[in-house]
Image 1: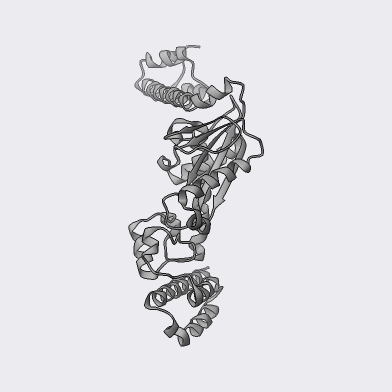
Image 2: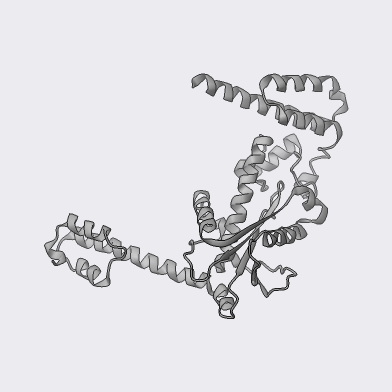
Length: 324
């Protein structure tokens, strides 16, 4: 039966049953006298062209991996990091190894992908990769060894966490790792190389989730929104409340906000953070009042701000519980 003998509904049903619309069928639909069928053909043509372009981009993104596969090196790891620029939290690196010729996600530079899509790709990467490794270096070590060295250390840790020994390593940027396997530094690698792009997504999603957890522990700084980056509202919070325990003290905007995080302030701050209910919060606040003279004005402002934010959270939880 020709396309012209089928109803529009019949044509749609036929197309839905096919994995791919043959070119001959598409040409027949484009020549159909019915406007609805021609519109359907135009949508199918655009979809096919978009898929061809995606596949072409995918092949370009795999060119570096294929170069090493052609040398007989099957296990090629892409490595990237997230978190060099923030004022708080860890730097996180990831390493990803894909099976040559396997089904692969359309991974791209994590910064260019919306958050929900990153989460979807994060799962796809873990589902189809041979191995995924993650390395974390916390804010304390960043302050001790500087962010450049911390980023390299996180990359080493990510490679060490792989369940396979890579035969070649592709690293985003200009950094190289001292390893006894062939490796290549790829400037802009998360836009040029699929395994590096996948590593950038894994590293960013992992770090973003960590910062969301920190937001619950240190409310008010907005870590769940800006992930520790120096946005205007983050800098305002720093200036108003001072640094919290996960801030990187050697970073300029943090260093200029005072020497919080020592002695009595730390004791009170952690007490307020750990308060599990309104009664406990008020008890800690009462213990602070007699010792206000031992704290400077910035430290007091930080504690007042945290107390206020925690109290508001408890009140919100209480109100939601009453509504339920």
